[in-house]
Length: 509
Image (tube, rainbow, N blue to C red; front, top):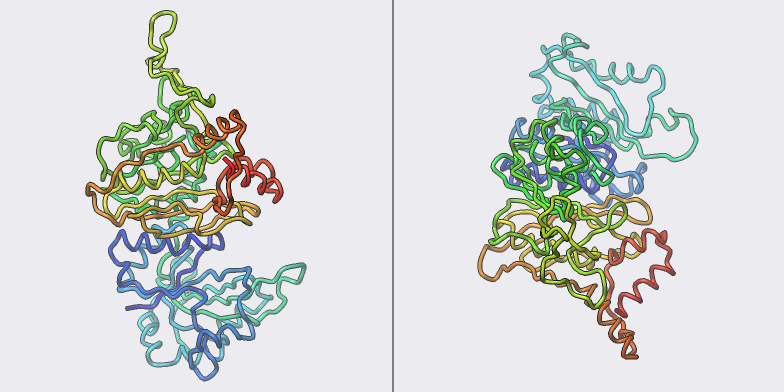
């Protein structure tokens, strides 16, 4: 096993490990890969002894709790595995073979001269090289980079090649984040740790963010998922050749393109066909964008239907379900049904004056009513348990109110196991990327969801009780998920008083 240092981007900290492990699973080396996360990475004292976790936390230069460290170490069986991760993980900037790291240069050079470490770098002595000296949260003063490089002169590398090196030697000083106005070079040398190693691969998947940039897309809408998150979701869904992936709230197709790019066959559906079609009657909007990315051949189809009235007649179809359900900020979720309390849908099709059934016209839009996000999330998880193959994944976003969120709010059901729960924080609210995995087989006990409209039923019961002059208050004690009535809370600015009133009204209904 070889020790590598993975350098991540500074964004999306809680998404890093789920993406990394998902890619390792695709390529079959997750079980042998050993990960040391940032808070467990040891430092070396001046005697060369590795510090314990408790000693590490009491270091003179502890990492700022507000600035997550951008590194982890992984032990891999081969350099090829490191290159696979760098080529596919969107959040990786680069991967290095780690030769030594220490809290001071004195100790770093001492470690670097040890026979076991010398055996790692001596084979590269005759290879044209360059040294890349950098720092995290810091700017070097003039002249200090050359001073650092001269400190490694004992290694006797033969030939410098700045333009086309055969090996890049990497030195990085990691500083804690310091907030406020200060000289850029302040605290020079007061680093948490200095790392030394060899560049194995740059994170080439980062370039895909520009490739899938929504603003450059042939077809997009106001609800189109941003490129970086679309790629991360596709990775956590383990999109790959031979996989079949479904998006039940496909919209303008952002998640289809990234999954198809990684080789999966994809299918999408939406209650509103206008989202998929666009305004051009001659071509499907989703397919125009798919052709732009050269993945149109991997899109099986896009269909218009409500998931609560879906056409699926058997389960165990898909390797993954990946979606961003509408939760009311830009577009609210809808389901087929009467929007008038106490009035059910007419089972008979509506016939136009010319004798044509209304639902046969291409512009037809069925009657809909709001689909409460908490009901939608529960239904989505149960639908995934039915439609997924054993071991298949559901990857979806769930909005949450920051102050009210609790892990018990997560929509879970028997047979679906939580893999990852990653937060994209927007302050008063956030959205959590939930990854679940089906851990049961396709037996008779796994049934399709009933899609009971709990929120609508509560409203109808409340209205009936009020008509009869009955008290509708509930006895209390029932927890309301933080994402319940999220749209209303969002447009109220997440004010505590209004949110509490909404939750009380929800309990009462």
